[in-house]
Length: 54
Image 1 (cartoon, rainbow, N blue to C red):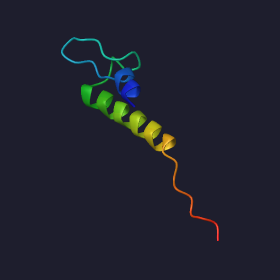
Image 2: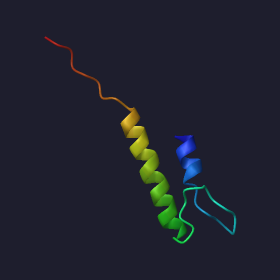
Image 3: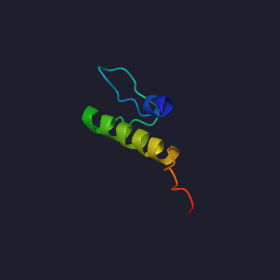
Image 4: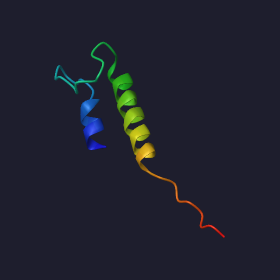
């Protein structure tokens, strides 16, 4: 998940962000995209527990 956050890190104060951060969008939108993809990856990696067979 840290890699996903670094990849979508927003551009701030003239500093370049991550390689997949959209340079033409506002900082808040970049942070939202970062959180969206990081959470999607985390939920895909987390497998739900299966109930035991009876």
